[in-house]
Image (cartoon, rainbow, N blue to C red; front, side):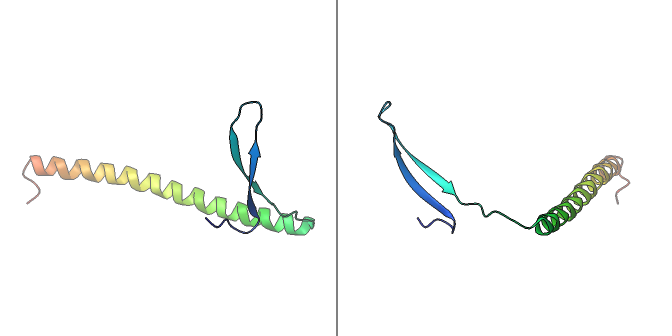
Length: 82
């Protein structure tokens, strides 16, 4: 199996236990520029705010759906649905 760029597999023998393990080593690039770090943080903050807004809308929609479902069932059992 091919691993993504920057990731390599290594084999490590543990003589004490007799087990061998496979390790995946990840190479993480170092960002030297503080300006670039701030830019990334701003982008991640923006994404986080969007996710938070979607979650809030989802919760509101779930509440509204629950109320609607109860209303439809109530009308169905009282013959008001027709």
